[in-house]
Image (cartoon, rainbow, N blue to C red; front, side):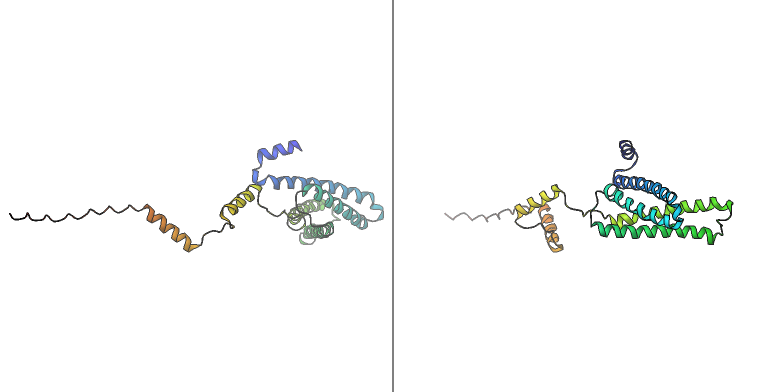
Length: 212
């Protein structure tokens, strides 16, 4: 993890580091669940491929929820296990439909056949494309609806500044309206104007000398 963190700090801008960390953890969890899915499908293949796939999907989805909740999105808000798990399972179902749709396009749209050995590579490419699209959808959907971001709160410094403003003013700080702004601008413009020159006192007329 230290090596991954150093690479992130070196090549990822600071504003995207949190997103990059979540994406890395999400991909790691996806890799673990892929191994679980393949292992269970092959181990339970004797009960039938469809039943084995259902069991593997339920187990992998549950493990994925626990790992994402406790590791990938550990810093995000918690809204209850029942709500999160139901949404998580439903969104995984949507992701599965995306994968099935891509495979359907390959089979019915491009007319590849599973009975043709030469088309096996095409089906694997389509399956990989579906997994990629479903992973992008799940990553966005989990962050948006299941593991929501915590509410933004004022920092301790902002709360301290606001408390000081209230203490000195006696009221909560309120921004001046348009009329008050105009009055302030007029007052400052009058203060910047040069003061008028003082008036000189008028000279008294000279009185005529008294006759002798």
